Length: 390
Length: 187
Image 1: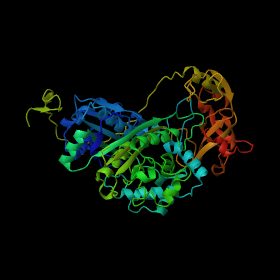
Image 2: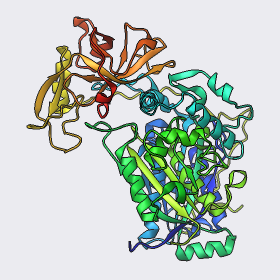
Image 3: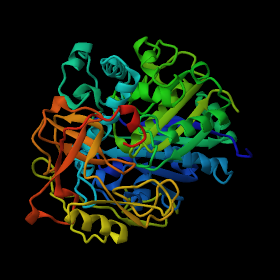
Image 4: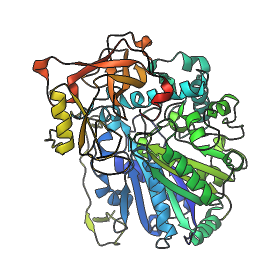
């Protein structure tokens, strides 16, 4: 490809919570950023550029914070810009940051994704009236629930697959000290009996609203070798990146398994030399804001044939000790600062490859996939990271 | 601490300002305030949406297509989303429609949300290729089906405006369901 090699050489995140009231937005971002720098054994002086991404401004009521964040980060004078791609933004932002290094212009780039859901009401932001279309009076869940119902109809999946996903992710979250939701009492029955919000989505099958930030330092081959020598932690080499999108409405569009998602997966697998994703990928951090999206994305990402994804969930393949662990961190179902959620997926994949995931570490992860989607399931961003230098 | 403190790390030492003296607070600091926010704006819908919105005022649903093409889009943005070619041919669609997907909502958002539980659904107006969002009325929420045939229920004539709000909800009509397989790709 002619691109320079690039690796994740530092990761940092905040403890996710419903209301992070003790810090302002710049303070929140700074916390994650400096943890990532510490992890890489670097200081801000070593950083050549900063690439940031957050959710749409009206989700937080904070307009264009990028205009004043350089000061808070101690990065005045460095190139700093923002990426916008709705819910997939955390993934897209990391990919843009990687491209800075691939291009050979920058040695070390800091990238940060975040959101303070507590300062506004994202659900309201998705439900405001506009004159040319009927108001969606049901929030994000009301948008996605009909597609989940259609998936259930087409696949003939048992009614409780969503419960199994939610139980797995919430139990995984207990192993991740940064996860927002820690529910030691969670059980199959408690999820099944939780309040029905947007039938077929129950309360315990949907993501929380979180405050938090995730940051990574990406480095060139030279920077990666120096960081490994300094910290003793191996880099996660980025061996494939891809972003794809499609129109929200178009004749023939399949919202259940969007073509852009299939194309994005095919593109990133081609770059990474993956021909059999179930065999060759050791774990996945997948963007699953509603439980049923795990089987839906398993199919969209090529881990299972169409209509068969739920079988992997049902037989435990996606459990921590299964063939393809999915969302060992607890996933979006346990932590959802929207603007950061994509970057958390990418970053957690890198942490698994680096052997940094602590209690939710899977043994022997060599290759991991980070996945994000956004908008009306129309924006996709993915990367594959590997312990082996490409 | 010196009188001056560095407020940025780059350019080093160039930007300095006097140290800030913060008076001691009495009682707890205010950390959160709730402030209602609103934005008032003028909306210029353009040619395509003007035709659509004027149609709604007449209780008609206008779609559009690229000349010579088959796909009729509603509510449209002036171009065919697949080809990018402007849609200039106006085609009346509906008013009857088919439910292509739905969910039962037990928690409503926004001032216009009906009492819960209600059904939020996608409606494929006859002759169109993509669905519109709306709610279902005059039927029990657990009797709604994919493929169910429906018609719009309009607000009273003296309340008609150039808005989608003219359609209060959709209600079932006595026609056989459309097979779900025929609705793929039209949500």
